[in-house]
Image 1 (cartoon, rainbow, N blue to C red):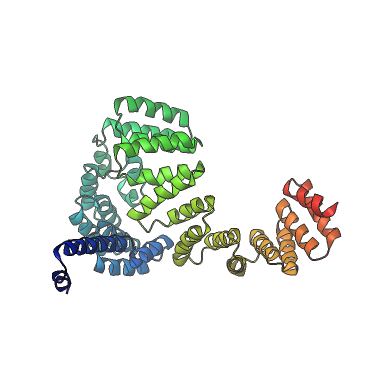
Image 2 (cartoon, rainbow, N blue to C red):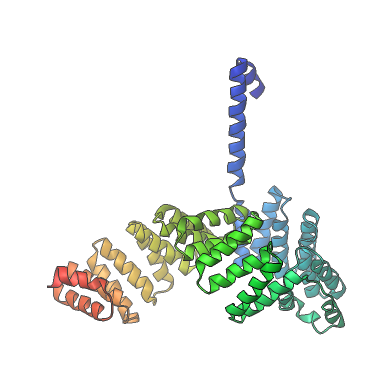
Length: 414
């Protein structure tokens, strides 16, 4: 059919038609590539929630559509491991290794250690330590999967080998001081190491992390940016820099970095929440809400996510939807002062003052030290015709430190 369409065109129009079709095909490919696999998303959510059988089912369906992604096999293998189905787990980790050799060696070591096959566990642990995928020794030694190996001669013998190069040892030492809350010592080691290893992604990334811990977000951004100059494909640096941008109030830059990470892994659910926060900083309420609804789809029972949705709808001026989410919060947790406060202030916006007074009073019964709630209650009482008690609430709010209450006192009570 495509051939027939083109043959009916003059040559110059034929070339233009070919170009247009190629553009459409390319756009279609890009669009489809950006649509996350529903079963991959659901499987990852189930894995995080501890619903391991459901995770396995979803990953299996995802693999039927894409059997060339080692991540799918590793995550399904992890779900089998959690179910103590060691044979299936090992099969999946082996499959991942066929796609990307060595990528699942540590998972295989864990699997065999947990199943009691110590010989294979050490074989794959050694293979991991020889590979470019190796992680820090502290992380391996603290891994609970290897608890039963740690009293064995083989474990002692394994760690007599010098698996890590000097750059990795510097990073491990600096990270030790970072964990010990000694950032100055960590920074000193990193600064010294960068003189010797000026192209070290690991050292620049760790330096960015230490600066982030200290609240020095500009320095953190600069360090992660340097890491990305060395390797533009280093995804962890985009994630970490995005968080530093968010803390620094550079919301558009944060969104851009989070976009890059989610393109790589659309099941990074925490990042949807962070990107939502960045969009909210830009007052872009629709995409902020959309991101939270993605998370809510897979974690609908999570009270914090429900509450965040309600707050975003409130900020967007969609009070009906805000009430819907605050109602869900209070249905499952009827003794939470924050939920009563949020629903009460939303009722205030919808001019349903009796409900507002009721909710805000309940919030103060549970937490009488919230000055802002006293302010909202004062406004609700004034709007419902109880000016005397309303002004008393505003006065109390001001005395408790709520500066905004003074404006309403001047406008209404004097």
